[in-house]
Length: 310
Image (cartoon, rainbow, N blue to C red; front, side, top):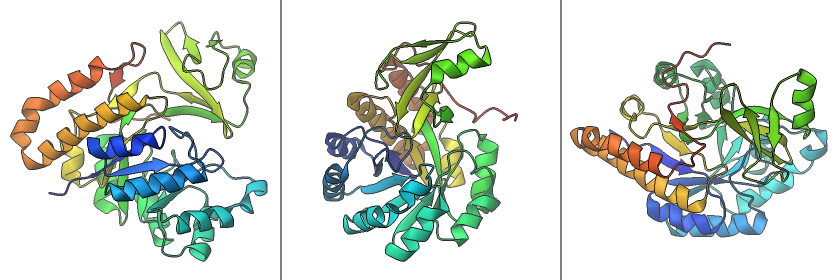
């Protein structure tokens, strides 16, 4: 039985070595101009350092180019992909076909991971992009265990699934979140001022939920009120042969990411090598993660046990 890759999104260059020592197999980095909802901003110099450190420590470095691109940025793709090729990154994560087409021209040997956040919901679409050059499909977060395993059974590409962290519920190119909800007549309140303030929330008093908000060059992002955590529910995904488990580091501290990565490393190794022991320790690992959660960030299992209703 193979072990899935453990992929983590670091907040800064200094996280790379820490995450490697904690057991990460790969990291996903990038800069806001080209990538969506990054845990940290990595300019070109940072990216080169991250690749150097990552490869020294034996882990892969992927770069996000999954933003929604408008005409004015298309001319920049050649130069950025050339830079990524020369920096020896291990793969580019893309959503827009413009990235795929440019990579074919500039860096034909570059591995490509298809990630549109929301539309990877069936195996046929995953294979469509596989036939056009993608080696991996990043599945939508709103899928059940049953749907994920069915996709893997029929997929001709690697499959990546998020197993930990917050998920995006809403994105807009606009930054006027408060005005939007006022216009909609919603009885919701925006707290906080700075777009990088960790205390910036959309508050739903009726459900007692706080939805984290942050804004970057790609607009406004409203995140889930809970964090996915399935450290104690990995058996089905491992048995299905899922290729990559992702820990999303958006709005998380470096210490938190290092600790959570250690627990998932232990869970994955134990689940693959000694299933009985995993059954004995999995709830304890969940409790340990729960003990370091922010008070306003309860854990849940996302949509893995839910039927998505559109």
